[in-house]
Length: 258
Ligand SMILES: NC(=O)c1ccc[n+]([C@@H]2O[C@H](COP(=O)([O-])OP(=O)(O)OC[C@H]3O[C@@H](n4cnc5c(N)ncnc54)[C@H](O)[C@@H]3O)[C@@H](O)[C@H]2O)c1
Image (cartoon, rainbow, N blue to C red; front, side, top):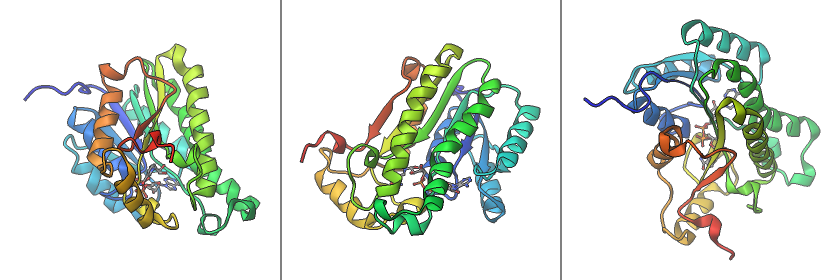
């Protein structure tokens, strides 16, 4: 069998909850190319599933618990990674959360605590991960996050997450500027809607799926495997000059003016 182009590389993947998670599609794509993976899962409830998924990767990996809202858990996670894999090459942040209270209300009704939690888990966690990953990324590499077009154009009912994703995309640009001299590239993938656990929390999500399928120039929804393939491309030689970008994987939906 030919060696994959990620043979000898280590990847950290945050955000695998189940087989529908976009992080799972990316984990599989990176693992198929030979990367050694560590999955960071949210908490005890997901442990068994995450460990089983890690073992089932094309190149079996491991899973470590890590609530990205807790500095102590992030520190423990990275200390454990550093013991086993002193160099990290790829990091995926595929994590977002907003309390139901916030998602169910218009932006002008969102309470301070709900705003802070939404931005903490959906935005700050990317910075918190970048801070701990950069000393381990001694041969450069890729920090990748996932965003959605509701950051840029108003998407009814996405409100609080739209503002969080806008901050996340700005963070991608600032991190790309800061970390570029170390050879670390920072990008976001922006897929169209995919039926996952997090997506089902967005009010009116089923209508969003239908609308995208009907209106996108390619008249199709993005498949998780296509998100995985795009992440593999970004991790490859082909992605080596790409940084600070938000890359749409949406069948062309984002080019439409009406
Ligand atoms: N599904 C879509 O339509 C879609 C489209 C564009 C972007 N995205 C983005 O993709 C990313 C992944 O979402 P998904 O659709 O795969 O859903 P998902 O529910 O499978 O993934 C969300 C992940 O976030 C994790 N998470 C939430 N709070 C956490 C915490 N405190 N600590 C650690 N992990 C935590 C969950 O455990 C889960 O693994 C999100 O950033 C989402 O906004 C999704």
